[in-house]
Figure 1 (tube, rainbow, N blue to C red):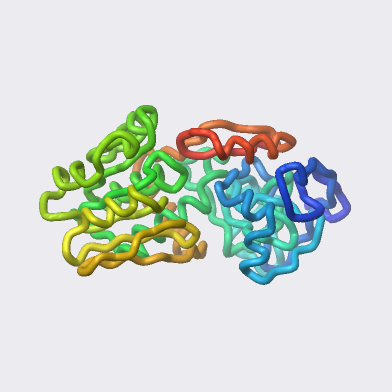
Figure 2 (cartoon, one colour):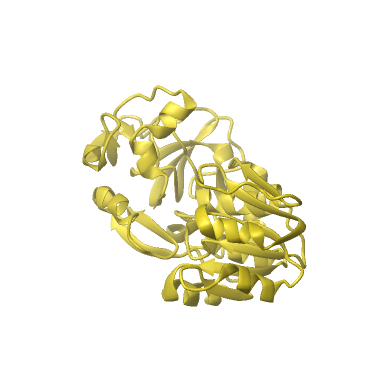
Length: 324
């Protein structure tokens, strides 16, 4: 395998934290691979709603990190293994993989190559294209950790999924159905409702136009068992109010304006932890039949700033950078 260490690659990097204008296409050295890492030739990268917070230095401050610049953004993506470190035995060059490379000192997925810890990547399920898998890792883990680890969702239970037409939500709807739950989905806009119906939710309503409490009462007259909240505010309040005595709601850390839990129900936050077991379970659920990871729009690597601007627009599913 030729050594990439002295080669150059295209990337989008910042020289300091700040606004969108700090993002510049650059030519940088291909990162070197440590013993527990793999080098991935990137095919596509997710553009996450959290990426601007990372670009502005929010995560570095929260985590007390002092990153080195130039700093390559992009916390999830997919591609092909190019090189494996000496201690990596479960992956080989040529494998299609997706993964999370959050706040990596060696740089993220907004680049032609990324060096990533082998425990933070997984093989792409045969059902998915490499391009679609590029936007799966972070939101897929958020969705699964919420349903499985936080809510401990069981077959036959009723669950309300808020933000069902968004990045986390559209995956959570499909995963909850694979877990044999009954899904009431709250989507955004008429296009969102149509999209989520296609994904197999049992009932879909438009959160901007329809009464969540009324829909929940019709769906589960004795109250809902669970709710996954990808947003806070009034809709989250109504979702929590629709829970039965003993019901539970969960939201990933970072969601703001989540209401307090009333007596008799449990509202919990959770951290996202990509690990081999979570990836294995995610892959197993995805492989249970057709599964849609929806990319609303794609951008070239050099258009990464435009992609981050587009995060403010209305779109279904995810945005992606495409490198190949």
